[in-house]
Image (cartoon, rainbow, N blue to C red; front, side, top):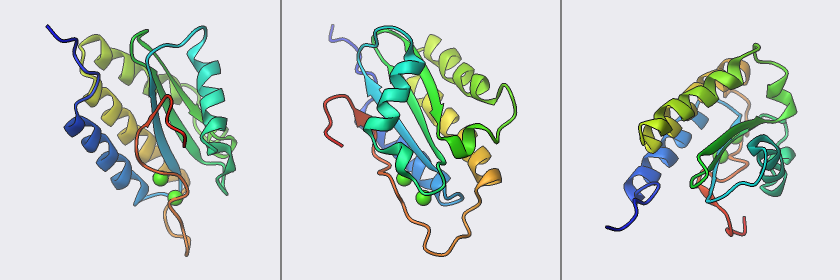
Length: 149
Ligand code: CA
Ligand code: CA
């Protein structure tokens, strides 16, 4: 039996759509990064990826990275300075719990989509989309390890 792909192409598309939708309501930027393995603490790795993807270069420092190591079943949510300090305590843990509880049921797509939704609503609240010239500063495509961007 072939091993189950983490996300089907259609599921990937659904997630990209969820990011598109979320970013229409906020100046914030959401990205998903998937890779197979993560040695050590996923939050440290997410920190690295955040910088590698240039997510620390958004104007308002309001990027949020959802990081998943698919084989190791590790996940982390990493937010830019502009948003990290603005949210109530426990918020990031709640997002992580959404991911983990769905992943336990092998509902990978739903887990990520719900997490995007929750983060999107928070970003909308803190960074509403009203600035003239608001840009899509970071691609909404899912980032995989070995991708150059
Ligand atoms: Ca934007
Ligand atoms: Ca974007």
